[in-house]
Length: 312
Image (tube, rainbow, N blue to C red; front, side, top):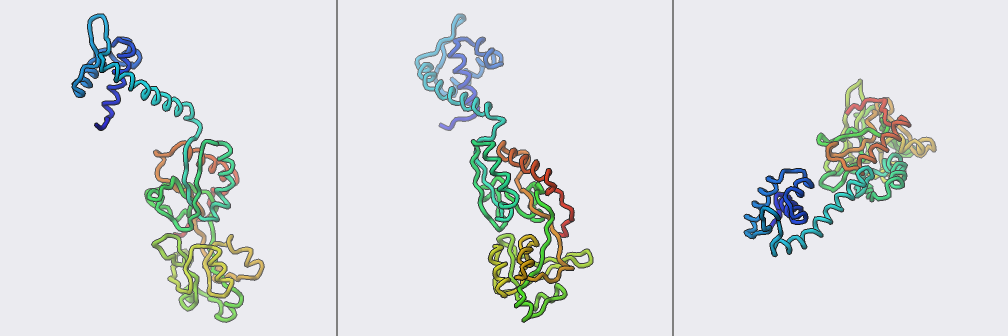
């Protein structure tokens, strides 16, 4: 027999009346009228096909079946009451689990500094962080939230900007450029070996450039396609082709002379990382508290204020 919400409500009514042996006292406890309780009890007895209470003008006494039901019911109702009380006591203290995903760079620069403090502040939270270079299906993957590039925000998601705008550069090794020459316009990339970049499982990323305020996208080809920074930077440094990457990822290699930036007048700036989550109305206390800590940290440091407009 499947228990419905009506069954649960009426069983709670029965337990209150049976404990007090009075409709009026049970009505005071539950905050409803005695007549409403009497009607509810009649409905329960009719559905079960048994009499649970013997009623008279002077007393309300459980029948034998009613006493057996009450003895089994009270521990369950007590456990439910204690569980609800526990939730109430911790209503302001996050308790539970969070599952997050993000690329390694977002984990290292944005999430890790906050998450360590978060777990120290809320010891009853358990957090799983999955390193994911590709934008996953958050809901289907069981994730509560993800950190990804702001211009990838799905329409059904809410995005909280957390990092500054980011510039993409095209880089190649000195040896590759000496052998193949440096492109002077994005259209020349079709004649070069390029390390393909993938941001989502189903989207091979076209290299994007800013040309006279417009977006110019180039479909590139080459020996390798990956979303892993260590791999596409390593391939470029080894002279396998040109790579398209974030300026912050490659600045030290440019300074060391291991890679050279080309096409810099056309290299665009895009929205930085954002925290994506499905809906404000479904936020648990754990995710809400993490969002507040992320806001507090990056609003204070100024990282949330994007100074460039994405061209995508």
